[in-house]
Amino acid sequence: MLPQLAAKAQASGVETALRWHANETVSMTMRQGVLLANQRARSSGISARVFRNGAFGFAALPDDSADALDRALRRAAENAELAPRAGAQPLAPAAPGRGLFDYRRTDARKFTAAERIELFRTLDAAIAAKYPDLVTRDLNLTLFCSEKALATSGGAETFSAVPRVIFHVSLALEAKDGIVDLYDAIGGFGEIEDHLADVDSLLARIDALYDDLRRKAEGAFCEAGPQDVVLDSNVAGILAHEAVGHTCEADLVLAGSIAGDRLGQCVASEKITLGDFGGRGPDGRSSFAIHVDDEGTPCADTLLIEKGVLKTFMHNRDTAQRLGAAPAGNARAFAFSDEPLIRMRNTCILPGEDKLDDMIGAIEHGYYFRRATNGQADLTGEFMFGVNCGREIRNGKLGRAIRDTTISGVAFDMLRSVTHVGPTLSWSPSGWCGKKQPITVGMGGPAIKCRVHVGGRS
Image (cartoon, rainbow, N blue to C red; front, side, top):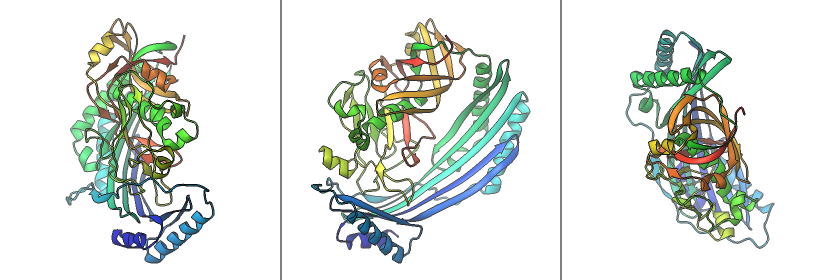
């Protein structure tokens, strides 16, 4: 498919990107030993994006024939003609991205559907036998792979196939005041054979999850109000993405993001350096990989905040031209029918040198938050996230487990309060972003000590 795309793009006579794109998902769900879902879905097609007279035109078809390419290209050109932008400049120049980046396993050994089901049954039976006090036990598996072939009139030619596996285990207990639950996400970059082949290792993770759940069931509610806290890497990574990263996407900057007039200003503690990275992140271990974006731009690393100072934004070629910046490969589309948007890739706070024990020891009265649930942030940088696992900190030591709570604040205020940054960068195995289109991302960071507003009972 790539040679056909390249030939059509080169012959188009206008600024053009042609993309063949397929997403495949395998999902399984088991509850209380009953298999509720075992599904496989695949969607694929081609898209054309044309830039003419200062405007983009886009068209997509669920077909990959030569005729479909011609039709999509023709319709995209017609759409571009419908919305010319007076005085617009050409797109910012970018070197053409090239290369083949296929991360799928090449060995013949693959889990069959029957073997996946048997794995679920084995794990479920072990959980039921060891922990009969559980009210519910849920197992959920999602295998996702995105394949893309992209060619542009500027000479970009690239193919990628990026798989990811996410295995969720959710357990629930009856506490004195009601049901208490907790889940863990296992997996990340790669395929099921990379993460779920060792049953003993999976059972050890489930044992640790049950221990956390038991402590949580006997735990306390947080005290409401501003608190000194330690955010473990899972929580810090989500904050880096949601509360900071979105405010630095150039389309949202142009829409009025709080970051828009802060360029060159101190917005965080000098201990904070936060970036958005190509490949698999600065350490090569993220749960997501990207080398060329969906405009054909090679993915370069971008330091959004360096030693506390806001340095730059994330761009596509259009916003880069309008704001006088260089594109770094942030234009991404989730499906063949989606037009590329400015999106994050692998976003994280870079590690520091502070030890976790020192962070905890520096807090007289506060909390250690280990796992975040869903949350939200807006263009003002205000955020609120759920936390479903953590511990009290009293007199510099870990205390009781906590029940579900929330943390909230303003991103730049929170970052300015950071006094410690840990030495170990960890990535969430299951990062997704929902900006108009769902899309896979890497979210990571070290543990940090800061101050946030904690929800709870006064």
